[in-house]
Image (tube, rainbow, N blue to C red):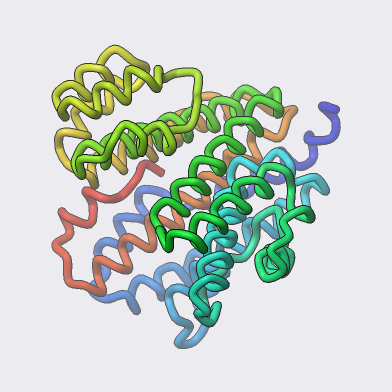
Length: 320
């Protein structure tokens, strides 16, 4: 099995030299307008075209990344921890469009493990048996909840928790330290985000118990109890966990905490992925790196478009 990835990893190591560097980010930050940024990206090999909208440029770079993965390996199963959120986004969109009668325009994301057409057909026919097991049962439950109560938030809660559970299961089944660690941190920081929002908005214990997804590095009972008490209690609990270094960013505000969450994942990729030359880990690490730089470009373009000061834009940028 090691030989399966030797060529792919060699290709990825060569591609890593084309990733945006801190110097490239500084150059984008020095640009005056989004158009100037796109021209600079064109110099780096991004397909910016003539008058191509920024979102189209970002979407094309995302597709370019996945096209490379499909070229390098016929089995994208190890990437499910990154693809499942797309599946559940599309499932949410299909259910809400079907129940409300809204036209499904610009609501579906490309990619995922399940074709968008299959998701739409399952929702349209109210028959989810053709969907994977990890989607079928929660889809039926969410559909029934939305039909009977019109509670869109509860519909989202059911599907979000199912998505996190699927990610964690995929991590365990991968038997790869990077994928397993990535999945665990993804679920844990998502649970922390949920607990924070619940604490700020006065949600009930029932809401938290329905929303939080099991993981290995958090005690969900203790997390729930702390969230129901106060932000101070929540921070005190987190200081006793693997996520103690997130308390400072949490207290600094939502943007700082979101940045910390993403930087934790980047640190894991840097620590584990670069040491592995014989598994899929470097490929997953490359995809995460590409997602980070595309997100960074989106933040910079949006900040330039809205006239934000450079210091506010830089505060939102993740580690590359």
